[in-house]
Image (cartoon, rainbow, N blue to C red; front, side, top):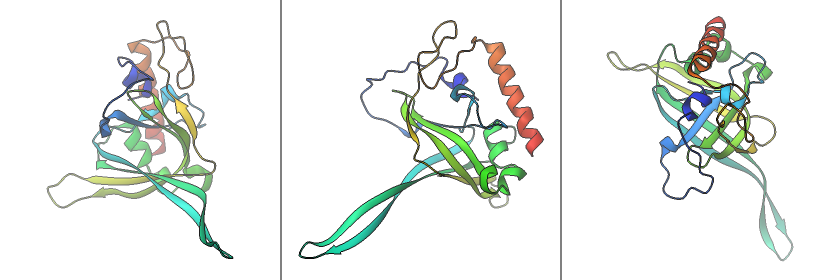
Amino acid sequence: MTVAELMKDRTINQAAEGEVTADDYVFAIDISDDKRAEVDDYVVVQEHTVSVNASFSPDTTESQYIRSGKSTTKTGTQETYSISGDRYVGDPAQDFLLSYKMIYARGEDARIPYVRFNILNGKGVKGIGTVIVNSDSSGDAGSNSTFNVEIRKSGANPQEFQYVPKTTGGSTGGEGSTETPGGTEETQSRTTTMKKAVKEQI
C-alpha cells in the first residue's frame, strides 16, 4: 500500500485536536531504486505490523564550571524507529526491508528515505535512515514467524513535514503530495511496479 492509497479517502485537518492512538501515525519508506520517489509513492509499513516505536536518544556533554557546578549541554538527538510484527510475504514494505539486499547492505546502500506523520493533522518528519535487520524470521514451532527491523536516523536531522492530500483532479496543495492524475487503475499499476522491483532485490 502506498501513502496515496492510504490517504485517498481520508481528510487532513491541520487544526485537529483530541486524543491520539498508535494507529494514527503513518510510517512509510521509499523503496525505489534511485531513492527519489514522491512521498505519495512511498510504501506504508502496516501489513501484519504490530508496532512502529519511535525513540529519541539525546547526545550530551558535561562540564564543571568554577563556582557554577556541573552543566549539561545537549549536542544532538538520535532517532530510531523499531518495527516489529508477523512476516507477510508479498507485502512490498516487508519484502524490501527483509530482502537479501537490505539484510547485508552496507554504507549508502543501507540508507533509505522515510516519512512519519500523524494521520489526523498531517504533521510529522521526513528524513534519511539506516536499515538494520535484527531478525527476519523468529518464533517457536506452530507460532507466527516474527521480524524486527530498526531504522535509525542517518546524517542530518529529519525535516519538519506537513502532508497535504491531493485535491480533485490530482493537483497538489503542498509538500507531501504529487501532481498525478488520481484513479484506482493508476494506483494499482504503481503498486504492481513496486512489487516487481522488490522481487528483483530478493
